[in-house]
Image 1: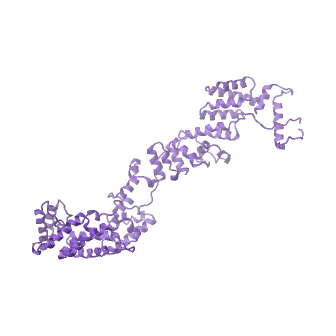
Image 2: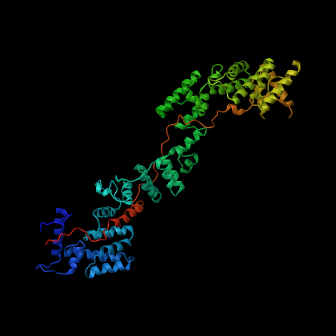
Image 3: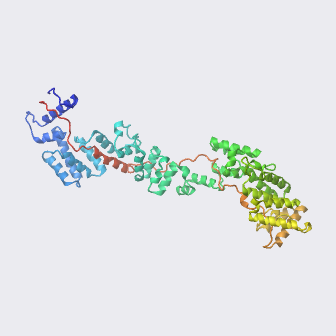
Length: 551
């Protein structure tokens, strides 16, 4: 080998080229050293050396011709000529043409066969990929950890490996393109492997809306509605929504016991089923029920009011100024005292309520909202009649924020008419429905009247009051008006229709429901990876710098 090396060529490159030239010349000579034929040289130019290797590849090419009947005719002719005589420089391009006409999995099989036969035109990376793609389901459990060089490749290859559990790097948009095209079992695999998450919102990519709901339940269960839970037949989530919607649940699970809490029933097992944060909240609720005071954050959660009210039995008049919850509960307690005829307690409670109605908050506004303010004044006016404090009743009802209510205005008219009536000519001051312990206008007052007579038998004062109420109702016509309390029964309902989620344990994702993925499930990903193999096929002869040995 001459020591003179052209510019731009390293010594290692020169040595490699010299050896390749020597191999070509050797392959083209007969055993006696003479040039054998041009065919061997042509094959050597394409990177193949040795008679056995060439014959093996020819057999492989014959098999390729049989397996690719739909390939372009010119490519078939080029391959046939190479088999029968000498190959031209365009043989690799023709072989690629035949491979391009094959289905992805047949392409994998054909490439592996050709590589084993000695074909040198597939890159080293392509050879590795073809070998792995020939395996049925080469997941992490089926093969050893792949070397890093196996993990590189196009997006199809990397997505295939990643879905099988190999640590191939894939971008979110690459996985996003895969999601709508693979079976649900593979999507579950992607979720289990952490390749897609709630932030990716893959449910939006699902073609089947039902599968989209399922994927959303696995990744973002807090977004699942009651209808969604029913569609999924997810009983745990259905119970959760039923509880939040206020359904009267029972049972030994956390939802049944929490529903009992809203009925004032405290199950000793409940605390042990709650996380630490919810245990603290439960303790605060129960302690507050003993003293009638709770942290402001509990009061601010209107959906907790039903439970707080159920747990609390006030032993004295409620301090209505403490919070809007105390005002709301004070109104209801006062109304209950009216219904049972306990006017001493009703009067004590209305005093607390009127005091709150006259109080301003720290910002200078009235402490009570307009609706509660009107109800307090209306109830105060009703009770003022008991001691003939009609001027006070008129004053309470004449406030602009009260008299604007149509029912309150009618009540005011009744009080003014009563003031103008001689004392001895006045009807009993009570609304007869309320005197019977019923809501105003209750159509079942006759049954209630008969039941009360049996209960109060022997109590002449109560019997007389009940009989007076019955006579007034019996004589009433459509034109008869009674003082109405409350202005709206809605005032006694909690501000929120449902129950608070504050005591509930965190929402747990739906567990996987699909079976383990099969090779059939991975077919699309496998084929997508196989299609990228042709990018690793070199259609040009080797272009190493050739150094003339005689230079």
